[in-house]
Length: 254
Image (cartoon, rainbow, N blue to C red; front, side, top):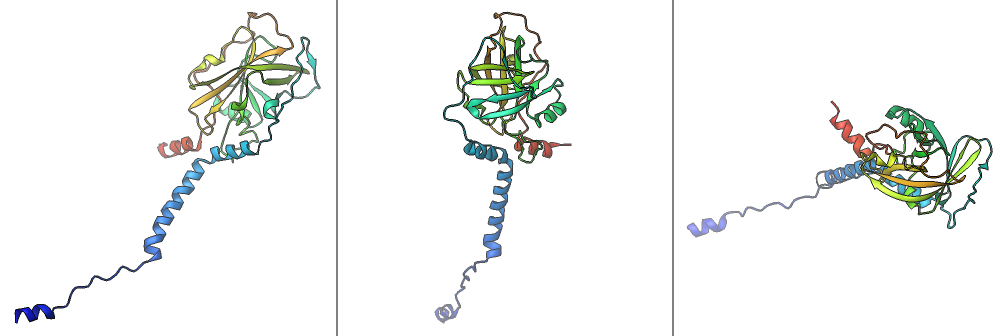
C-alpha cells in the first residue's frame, strides 16, 4: 500500500525558462553599449589624431631651402612657422603671459612663442608650443597642429619667417621629458629653437621636445650672451588636458 502511494505521487517538474529579450538580452546590451560610448568619448582625442595622421599627405621628399650666411628676405607677412617634412605651415603667435588662460587663447590662433624666450635670430633658445591633440570641439583650428611632430628626423629643417627675414634651423635632438623637467628651456650658448608638445597623444604625462640649431642666416660665434632669460616655469607647457583628465577633474570637483 505504501508502495502504491509513492507511485501515485506526482513528480515535481521544473518549468523550462522562457527566453525574454527585455530581461535577458537588453540589460547587458545597454550596459555594453554605454561602456563603449563612454570609452569612445574619453578616447576621442587619440582617435581624431590618428585619423588626421592617416589622412596627412606628407611629402616623400620634403622641400629643402638653401641656407645662406646672409639674411634671406621674405614678404612682409605675419610671423609664420614652416616645417617641410610635415607639410606644415602655421601662424606663430607671440604671447608673453605664461598663465594657462592666456596660453590657451593664444594656442587657438597657431603655435605659441613661449614667454620671454629668445626671438627669431636672437642669441638664446626660442621655445615654441603647440597641441598634439585636444578635444575635437575645442575652439580654434590648431588643436592637432603638432600631432606629427615625432616624425621629424635629424637635419630636417624648421623655418620661421619673421620681420621680413627667413630663419632656417636644422633638427639636432629629440627628447621625451617629464613635465617638471624644465632644463630643455635653458639657453644653450647658441641660437636654437625648441618645439614642445604633449606625448603620447591625448595625454599630459610627458613632453616631446624637438631641438634645432639656426643655420641661416649664419649665427654669430657660439657663446654670445643670450638676449633672453630662461622662462620662469616649474612645468613644461605643451599639452591640453585629456578627456580622461577632464572627466577626473569633473567627478572630483568639490
